[in-house]
Amino acid sequence: MKKLLVLLMVLVTVAGGMVFAAGASEVAATGSDLITVGYSQVGAESDWRTANTESFKSTFVEANGYKLIFDDAQQKQENQIKAIRNFIQQDVDYIVVAPVVETGWDTVLTEAKAAGIPVILSDRMMKLSDDSLYLAWVGGNFLKEGQDGVSWLNDYVKKAGRENEDLNIILLQGTIGSSAQVGRTQGITEGLAKNPRYKLLAKQTGEFTQAKGQEVMESMLKAYSDIDVVFAENDNMAFGAIDAIKAVGKVPGKDIIIISFDAVHEAFNKMIAGELNCAVECNPLHGPRVAEIIQILEAGGKVEKIMYVDEGVFDTSNAKEVLPTRKY
Image (cartoon, rainbow, N blue to C red; front, side):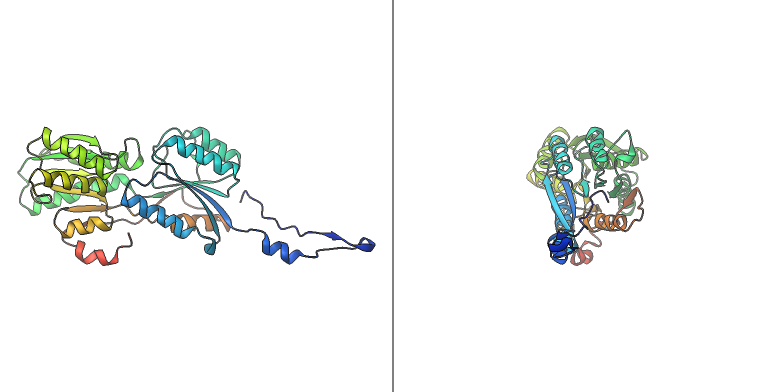
């Protein structure tokens, strides 16, 4: 790719003007042929994000032919922009970004393009004036995830014989402007709007964290006396909501139906306990898929612009069976 490997052997001039490649094998052995990847991660706001980070760290190791330069942006876009510029200065081979929000990236990605460094997006998307500023995107289909959550609710209501019952619904949103929030919110709100029995009382960001999810749920329980369903746009906010619901003497999963997104290990424990009704999967294991893209590019091949990871929907009926197979 952009970075040229040092293939020229050291030519040593000896007496009589003879030129030979003495020490060539030593040069080849000491010269690094690792593929350097600069990875800017959103932060460590959730169990999902921790698993996502570990997927990259365990994939992009020297044994696999990589050198990983990792940066935790701590939920700040300015930190990510700084990290990307540092990657450019360090002359990495590839830049991978899980963007905090969708907008505001054109300038720094133009700098990466000018430097000849391919950019791969992971998890969240960017809204750019020029899509050629990034090579490929790997992640979940957030719109479909939201739609799948509503579809699960539709089936649940039908099986429970509650089709003719009005349901009051709260939506705990993720970080506003992030791809996961935008897609899931759209899928959920559009799906709910199709059923006149569903009433969306309020929606508010819990910033994808358990503490903020609990805080927002506490305020919702004070504002609304009759909440039937909670959609939490990630598991950690759902865990916070569960704690808030318990604190007011209600039974999560029974008195209030809870649907979350990500389907991390602890979500399965909550479903088995009956406290969480449904978890829509968002597969965090992006490292191997990004490595696959890089290997195809290194071999001179072409890759798809958009690459979704496989995802499923789980609930109390299958959580116990599925849990032993979970990798995150």
